[in-house]
Length: 96
Image (cartoon, rainbow, N blue to C red; front, side, top):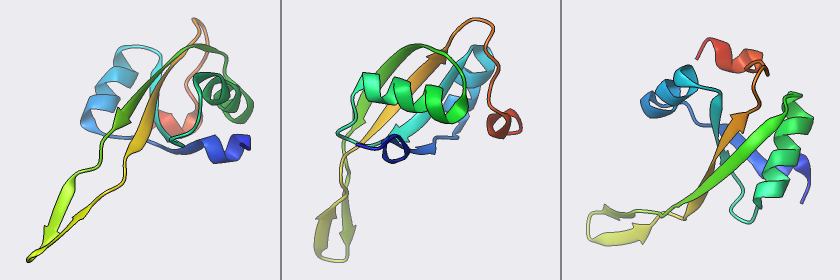
């Protein structure tokens, strides 16, 4: 898997904003087949920051209805990436 395919997008919600401001943690939506080592390598290569730890979580898809028809959203994976002490937050995360 290529490094650019591992990280899909940063998750910017109220909860992740509080986590980011309280410490050195950034939250990303990642590929469902990505491992913690691949996520760590992708963040270090793409953002240029050293990673201390990676925690992952599977978010299960919800069942959604449109009238009498029911469908299911697909599962997705998110990663909580903690940067090492002294590493700076990437510029695109500063204003969010």
